[in-house]
Every structure is written in C-alpha cells, then in structure tokens.
Amino acid sequence: MLTIIDYSMGNLHSVGNALDRLGVPYTVSASPEAIKNADGLILPGVGAFPDAVRCLKEKGLFRPIRARAAAGTPLLGICLGMQLLFETGLEHMPTEGLGLIAGEVVPIDGHGEKIPHIGWNGLHFPAGRRHPLLTGVEEGDCVYFVHSFYAAECDDVVIATAEYGAQLTAAVARGNVMGCQFHPEKSSTVGLQIL
Image 1 (cartoon, one colour):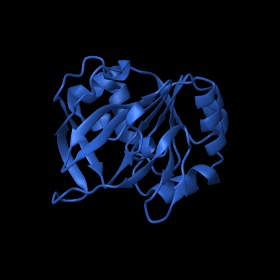
Image 2 (cartoon, rainbow, N blue to C red):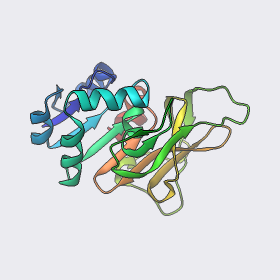
Image 3 (cartoon, rainbow, N blue to C red):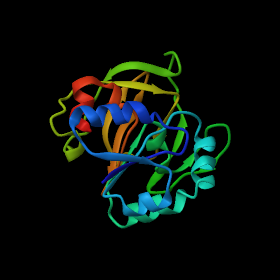
Image 4 (cartoon, helix red, strand yellow):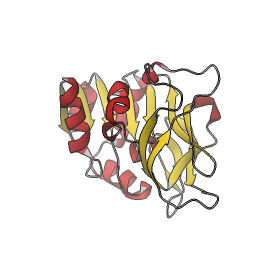
C-alpha cells in the first residue's frame, strides 16, 4: 500500500485527490508503523524547512523514512518534501535534512524575478538523463511551482530543471528516492502522468 506521510505540513488532500483520480490505493498516516510497512511513500510538504524537520522528528518519522529509503522503498518528495530529502536546508537557519540525497536547499536568486516562484513553468531535461518518473513528459511541458528555495550542489541527481531568472532544480532522483520541486498534484495531466 502507498502511504502519504502526514506530519502536519503537507498538502494531503490535493495529493489524495490526485491519487483518487488515478485509482491508486493509498493511506494517509503519521504512524511510524505505517511507514515501515508501506510499499511506497509520498512525502508532501508546505511551509518552512526547519518546522518540517521538527514535526517529522516529534512524530518519530525521521528514522523510519530513512530506513525505508535505505531498504529500497520508492519515496517521492513533493515541494518541501523534496527539499527534506537533502542534507541541509538554509531556510531561517541551517537545518539537517533527511540526508538521502547530497546537496543543500538554498534561497532562489531570481535575478530580478519575483520571489517566491509561483506559477506554471516548463520542464527541461539534462542531456541523456531521462528518468522513469518523467515517462510521458515532454521537453517544455508545464507544471505548477510555489517555492522560494531550491536544491543546489546536486547536479548528478537532477532529472529536470526550470528557468526562473536562473536554472532551478525541478526534479531529482537517486535510486528509489525521487523528488519534484513542483506540485504534480496541481499540474493537470502532466502531473497526473508523473504520479
């Protein structure tokens, strides 16, 4: 069973509604036991990096998520959930993330663009790096973003980028651990294809 991790900072209803449209069975849970028994995990997220880490730790979810990822369970982080997959977040103060992917989460330098980056933006794929997560997604297909921070120092795991004043990390993958900075659950047919 697919489990959407509820740590009080995720857009659970939108993700659940998208999975309902796809006919994908899932459960929503804050239970470490549910995470340990999940066939796949989705880590959504809305809010600030340090608050999210605190909530995960208070609910006893930090170690089970790391353990399941290490065991090969597919894990998809969405928006803040993707950022939490990295070693460090620099929002408000340096904060240790899950450390499943090397790199850090830093403020967007929009080079004159408004921050946060909100709205539809096209995806671009690094040469020779088409990941199964993005099967059926074409170069330039648009997805919906809402963020002020992005993953940096992680070029080896980037499977999609978006341009917003500069090139930003849009999606990453390292083995069974994957992340979308955008919201696939709010990205119409392209997002449903990804989910």
